[in-house]
Image 1 (cartoon, rainbow, N blue to C red):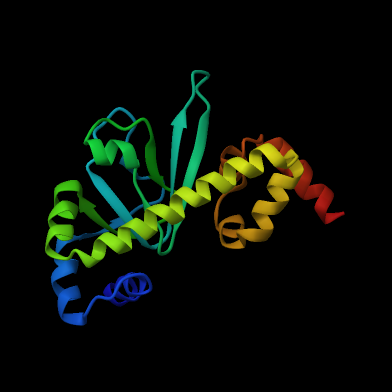
Image 2 (spheres, rainbow, N blue to C red; image 1 turned 135 degrees about the horizontal axis):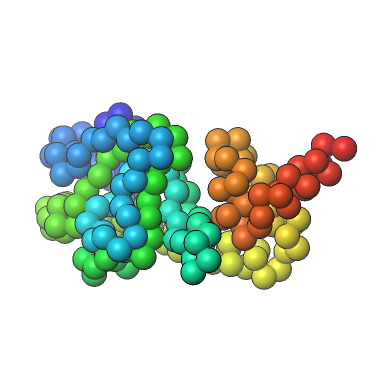
Length: 191
């Protein structure tokens, strides 16, 4: 587990094995069961989560009581409500495990201390946020440019790991589609 995280960090910022042994002490390892909630909307957001193995999703519930997924995180991805985490306020989102998940978590205060002690990790986290922000922009672009069917087909072709691991109703929610419409697209694709 720690080798996986060490390798991931070193893709973006240079960290020695010696430094990593101190870095990992800032994190708590957690085993999370499928459907377990890590952060609930309306509660404070004090943790940032790195998925070692498994899958998380972040969603909000609209005024009609419908859950809308806004983000997924699988192996080697980060997840938190960035604004609530940064401002140490209540989250507008719920973060829940889609499958049994192993993760590392760090508190806001712990991350601040970590970055003071290891400033080279500022680069690592900056790149992680840039990748996340860029992905969000591309999702918005696709929502405006593609038909509903094209959105689904693009997602399943470009993100096969998600398409195979995540239940179709969550993919539909993430793409702004209904589960019924996704079933129609899948049936049409098979024929």
